[in-house]
Length: 216
Image (cartoon, rainbow, N blue to C red; front, top):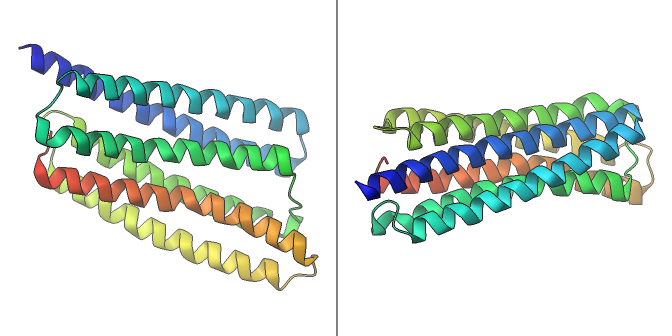
């Protein structure tokens, strides 16, 4: 019975971790929104909240590692589960990097690119949300591999859509009248925002690999 209590606790921690990552990524999007609106105080405040949430996610990851080392789940799947949660934690790390990029490097973002940049972030968020649904399907009791695979497919489709949006916006930036150095600076921000979708797909790959062994 003890092993089931450990597994229940591990499931709870993983889902709490995913909720925290969701808040972290969403708040990072809010940082960009405030930055584009020119509200410096709100930008700094929300960026600090992103850093706090990322730190909480790291703490949860360490706690999950401890629970797994203490015997939650069968030995053959423990390392896969840890890699899965670690991959999800990287998304929170990227969200913090985006927020710090904005407050520390202050990239120039002409108004003509505001809507498209927010759309790249919006679709990257949608990609992450599908990943979160897949994670919830995996960690709920008697999880359905069919549900996991459907959400995995959506993650892949959304990641491809983000790639297209990212590429189109980058082309517009580099054909604009901005100075080359400022174009390159903005392109780095676009790429980092797109990384949210890339990392979501990477995590989905880890999830499907773990699901091949066992729906926990």
